[in-house]
Length: 179
Image 1: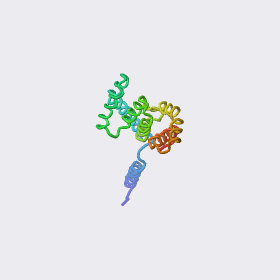
Image 2: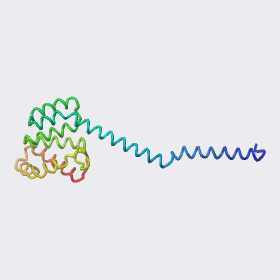
Image 3: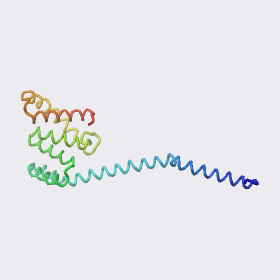
């Protein structure tokens, strides 16, 4: 088989090439290319998130316009229309909760706000463009003791008990708790 130096040299080069190919296949490429893939993936996720935020702003722009014009009932009707088209969208729940807060329907508002946070935790994240953390902190500061005392006086009021449960849920999420 290996008769002279030339055959030995060719055999050695063939083995070296085979080892290099196996090393590349098992190694998965260099660390730099893996880092580039991680950066690309993070960039792709950030672009998708910004696109979602932009889409939500455009989708719910008519609701926001009605709210600023003081037409909360019309805004609720528009939200009903949008929720039929996008039934599992958390932003509609959040806006509904905000409108109900303005209308002083506190138990109903807390239910919608808690549902929105359960659907999308970005609403309690300080660094998210969707964050409503200040709203939740204000709601808890103003309503937790009021709802707690009203629920204690009337333990059979299921709406108050549910509102208290939702307020505790929001309080836990603001404190850094998870689902």
